[in-house]
Image 1 (cartoon, rainbow over the protein chains, first blue to last red):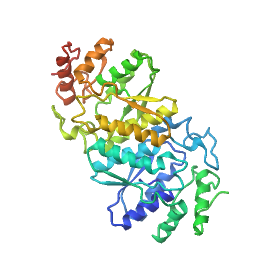
Image 2 (cartoon, one colour):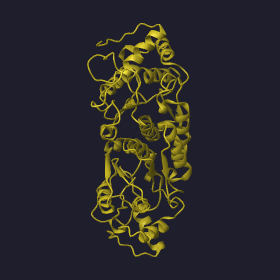
Image 3 (cartoon, helix red, strand yellow):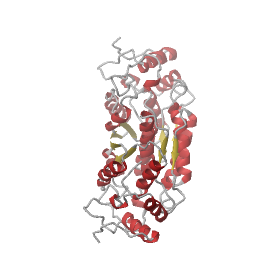
Image 4 (cartoon, chains in turn purple, cyan):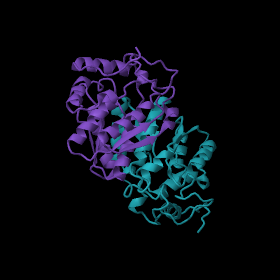
Length: 209
Length: 209
């Protein structure tokens, strides 16, 4: 699953470096930052892996009134706040990814969940995706696996990992908005800045502010 | 979750009869029988419950080449066959239903899984949806419940239950095709005929054949 952000990009590059025959999947779900899906396409080309774009923009109607990721009427905060969460969004993505995996005879789904998100986002926690894996195996009668190889790393450690793998980190998109440059103020931009800083790696991102 | 078929219609009517404040949700997923979603709307009006239609028709591209439910190039059989299965489809529906439930502050999702489907469809089995419930609670940090009240009944018993509840069974749509009348030949029409027969209730359906 490749959103076009830092985390999933490093995971995709790592999986490729491990010799997996990687196929990416990315999702439009009505997000303001729909630009990230175009970035995911650019990154998949750079990594030399095929990508499946799934347009579920209609989910905007499900998430409106709930999350600032799709609804401009909800304040986008600079630190974590409840309305940033698009409830169960990643489970929707994982479910479609499972269906797609079965269609293309893939046996494993790589998921960019990591330790810095886990305290805030329930669907980035190990208990969640392990339970999801069990559900997926039961619901498909297969041995399909969900693997989050960097679930124990912080975002800063993930960036270091990416640097070592020569991942084009400068191409990735974290911002929750869709301007030309990263806004530099939303929670996701703040996390990105902080992680580069903590990693001691110069941040290649151009921020509006 | 209301598909417009027999099972989910009886469950919706039963839930209403139990005093629940029922909200229906139905899904376009690229199915040939997209007519069922219109039927779901008619049934929800008849039952006096609001309905949310979620258009994920784009999933046709995920299920093409895999299931005869979306792909006319795959033979539609009269008895169960592997290509009838749209892998993990019901998990996709359940995931979106969970997101919607959280948006409207609903605490429970009713699911029309039953005993006659369980041997053939992994995502109609109790182990599956119980594991899904656990996953949903972990992934949302809520106590959301998935309940399949008739999971131990056969389809025939479900029809009897519906009859007792005065459910408008004649309005429901089972056929995997989208003609004016039920085709009378696909697996789903065959199951419908058989269940009415077993229930000893006269089948109100007009079949092509």
